[in-house]
Amino acid sequence: MTAIVGPEQGTGSILGDQSPTITSATLTGASVPDGSLLDLSAVVHDDAGAQGLHLPQAASATPTSPSSGEGFLAWDAAGNQMIAYNGSAWAAVGGGSGSGDALVANPLSQFAATTSAQLAGVISDETGSSLLVFNTSPTLVTPALGTPSAAVLTNATGLPVTGLANGTDGELITWSATGVAETVAVGTATHVLTSNGVGVAPTFQAAGGGSFDSTAQDALTWSDGANASNLWTFDVSGTDTTLKVQSDKWFIGAGTVHIGGAGSNTDLRISGGTATNTIYMATRDIHIATNAQEVHIGKISDLTTGLSVDCADGTVDLAPDLIAATGNEIAFDLQYTTNKATSGDDTGLLINLTDTASPGRSYLLRGQVGGTDQVGFDADGVLFMLETTTPTAITNYGRLYTKTDNKIYFQDGAGTEHEIAFV
Image (cartoon, rainbow, N blue to C red):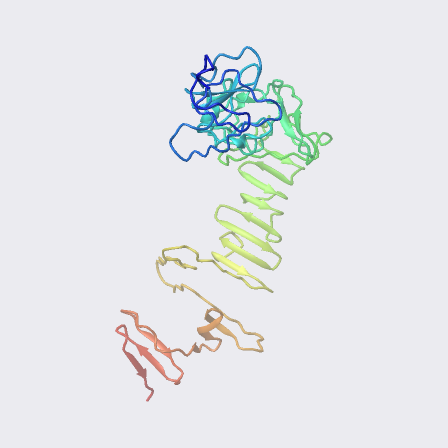
C-alpha cells in the first residue's frame, strides 16, 4: 500500500477503525468526541520507559495564557507543580511536594502547623512583634493600648498619679455605701474634712476654733494618727492655763491632771480626793482604793508601808508568764537594802497568819508544782514535804527529802545519799 499511496507519513501497517494500535504518533489538533474515552489505564509504570500522559512543560507558574478557552493543564518546571488555566489566569492544582488543593470552604487546619513568625511573614499590615495572642489571659509585653472604650483595672498595679483623669482642684474621691466612687465637694480655706458616719460621704466643714458648738456636731475627737511622737498643744488666751471640759470634771493646769473632782497633793486624780473610791498618783505613790479593798504602792501621809494590799473578801493573784525563748527568767524578784544606823531587826519577807476561824487546815506557806503541794509550812509551824524518789544531784548543793519508805534523806553535792537516823 505504501507504494501506491503518496505522499505518506510514518511507517508500518495500515490501520482499521476498530482498536488500532498507534506507535509514536504525533497528533495535530486531535480531539476526543463526546461520549468517547481516552483510556490510559493500561499504562502501569512498571519500567523506566517514557509512558503515560506527558503534560506541556512551562518555564514558570505563569506561562503565556491561551487566547481562549479554559481547563488547560501544564507542568511548571521551575516550581515543580501542575498548573491549570481557568480562563483568566494560571493557578497551581497540586502535585510536586504538595498534598492537595487548598479550598476556601476548609479552615486553615488544611495547611501544615504555622508559627507566629511564619504567619507574620505573609501579613503586611500587622503591628508589634513576637507571638500571636488571643483574648483570654494573654501576656502582652510593653503594649501601647491606646484609648480603650472600656477597661476593668481591678488587678492593675503601679497606676501613676499622672495617669488619673483630670478633675477639679481640691476635690477628693470617696466611695458610697454601694461602692460607687464619688467626689467630695471642695471646701473653703481653713475647712477640714469631717466624717459624717458610715454610709454618708464626708464633707469639708469649718474647723473647731476656740469653742465647740454642740448644735453643729455631737462629738469631736482629736487624734494624732500614726505618728505617736507628735503632741497636741493648746494655746488658751489669758492668764488661766487650764483647759476645762464640763466645769471641774476634767481640767489640766498648774502641773496637775484631775479627772472627776478637785484635790490637793496629787499629780493624777480620778474621782475624788480621799482614800475612798479613788485612784490618785502623787510624787512617790500610787493609791487605788475602793471602800475596804485597797492597794497602796509608795508612801503618803496615811500609809506606813511601801506596799499594802488589803482585800477583805477576795484574793490577791500575782500570775506572771515566763515566755522568753532563751535566757533565764524570774517570776518574782524581791530585793531590799538595809542600812540601820543604831538598832532594830530587818526582815526580807514577813508572812503573818491570824487564824480566827478555819474549819480546815491553815497553811502559812505552800509551794506547788502543777497544782500539787511540794513543800510548805502549816499554821502550826510544821514543815511538810511531798514524798519523792532519789533526785539528781546538784553540784555544791545539799538536798533534803523524804521517800515512800517513810525515811528522811540528805543528798550531798556529789550525789551520795545519806539516811537521817533518829536515836
